[in-house]
Length: 153
Image (cartoon, rainbow, N blue to C red):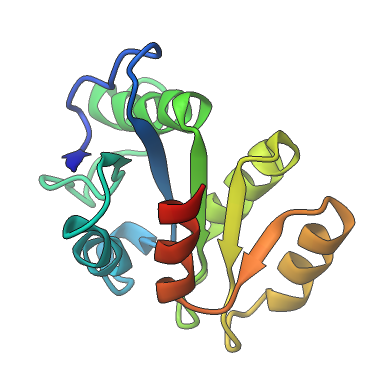
């Protein structure tokens, strides 16, 4: 298994390994690191590529502007990774706000490559559940179920 973080080069679209984008709560580094937990669940028995947007050297002081090169690079990496991925995992941590994750759900929900986990406690769970039901987006209840989905699809 390989994990790629921004700003590392994304894999070639023709690669033979399943590519999974880990979209979900980060909240400028304030949310739980569910990406590492999921990576550990998959590391023993899954051979694929994880695209983890949780940048190792993220600087929360970066101005969130198209003119800011580091910020623009991050957002463009994420958008390219979402487009490239075979599966887009979406996790809404209960204690998070996750505005970008909500945006990503809207942008990529109709691609039929998403699996969504939105536990009780997420402030917009009702909205997420309705969108998933209306657009037939597969939902699970736990990170363990996400890992099983990734292994089996």
